[in-house]
Picture 1 (cartoon, rainbow, N blue to C red):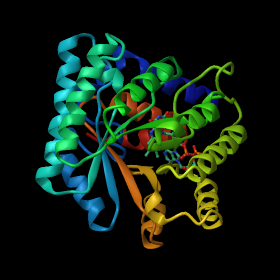
Picture 2 (picture 1 turned 45 degrees about the vertical axis):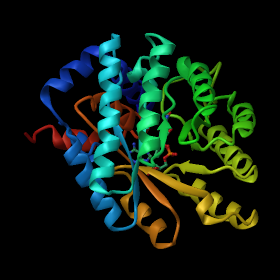
Picture 3 (picture 1 turned 30 degrees about the horizontal axis):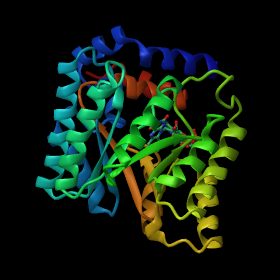
Length: 305
Ligand code: FDA
């Protein structure tokens, strides 16, 4: 049953028709638990609350499907506005983004130009930009664009997914670039020809790449709500004598709040991924797919306005 629900949510998240429909109706079905709001102002308020108890943030203006150059440029403009709102409000947040929303599927050069506009503004404001990793079909291209940008910018990082077979080699290659990486398990539906089908293998690989990247002396964001992974990291940094300023834990807005706060109290750097915007549907579906038990939460909210 869980597997079936997982596939349904993953397919819905990719459906352009479902995304369009959801956009019309505003944040519904309990999505507000995972999405900070539809406007920049709402997202800044959410960041302010996180900052108040010591949690940093990374803001993501949601938007996944773009069909032409103009839409890609508008998405880049929204990223820049988000960076400016962060600076103006004086909150502690960087920016996360998806390169497909900046035109990666339309034209690589267009996407690179949009990225450079964003990175230039971020650099001027003293901020950092993280490239989210999307499905496997975009993995190689995303890494190629990341390397191209990294030649010119040191305020850019990327995400690596532990469920992919290729990942350990990617982390080794990225060491040459002293890459600032966010390490995750992976959220998309991938074929068994490219990704570990078993959770245990994904977890083991995540531990392997956390060790590898930290031991190489690179800044590492460990993005997981899995206490076994978090405990592993705590022991590892003690074993390798790694400074607490050299890594951070990251979690998603609205998930495992108590754990987020506990880590802050223990003195770790903690950053929360705060998505906002009207394009919330695909993101919401991925969160449901990760944990089909959330479907009860959705059903409870169906009757609310
Ligand atoms: P796991 O799935 O094993 O969950 C461990 C525990 O966490 C669960 O038992 C449950 O208690 C809780 N939990 C996890 N997900 C939950 C949910 N949706 N609702 C409620 N509870 C939940 N992926 C990707 O492919 N590309 C990316 O760029 C990113 N970026 C990213 C940023 C940040 C900050 C985070 C935390 C995660 C991502 N991810 C991602 C998502 C990631 O790949 C993965 O799908 C989720 O983090 C879930 O995996 P966990 O490591 O939490 O472990």
